[in-house]
Image (cartoon, rainbow, N blue to C red; front, side):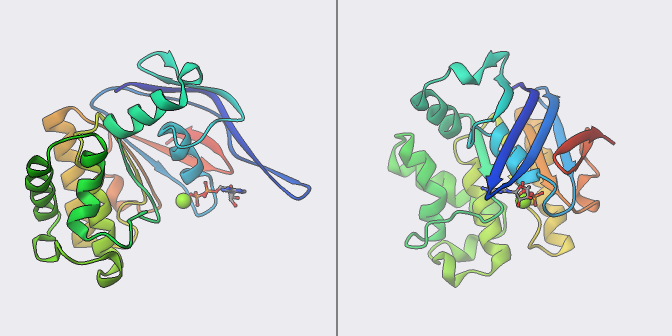
Amino acid sequence: MKIRAVNLTRVFHIGLSRIAAVNDVNLEVNEEKFIAVIGPSGSGKSTLLNLLGLNDYPTSGKMLIDSKDTALLSKKERRKIRLFRIGFVFQTFNLLSTLSALENVELPMSLAGKPLEDQREKAVKLLENVGLAHRLDHRPKELSVGEMQRVAIARSLINNPELIIADEPTGELDSKRANEIVDLLFDLKKRHKTTIIVATHDQEIVEPADEIYKIMDGKLSHR
Ligand code: ADP
Ligand code: MG
């Protein structure tokens, strides 16, 4: 998937104050690219990723997917793109507390209407890939934070997305686990031509990225 942001801006109003959390950002990410966005807490990383992943609407500017303006999409079309073409790893994981690890990973496939056996087989494989074969039946509250993060990563991959957007995907992991996750993402890029956008404040994990951007007070610049 090819994505392009043109003068992308997202403003929040809190009382009388106005925050341009994403401020006039221009960015082009082509297929098979691994892009890292680094910046301190509060610099606008999550806000930018939510715009790029169609989880939010810009205040001004444009978000294009494969050269098409996403402002022209209906809610339903946006949802379809998010479900079938984008895998999102949220900073807060967004796991459903009543579902097991396995069921959380299966969920996007079941929303996409895939048969149960296929879901199960694939979800188990993905959980094995992130080192959680022994945690399939655990609920989120029975998992460590690092394990929840890995469940969220496995879930983001279940529908073979063309674009993976990961918001601090290694934030709660030790450096060995963090490197494994980065290797996994890099491998996806190579094998499936997946486009990958990662936000982080961890210098170490951006090493394999094709391009590194810095964000500061909502302003994006090439590093
Ligand atoms: P980061 O992910 O880099 O830590 P965020 O994108 O979460 O940064 O936030 C950027 C800025 O926007 C911060 O000042 C934050 O307080 C503000 N912000 C983010 N989301 C909201 C929101 N929903 N409402 C109001 N302000 C927000
Ligand atoms: Mg954030």
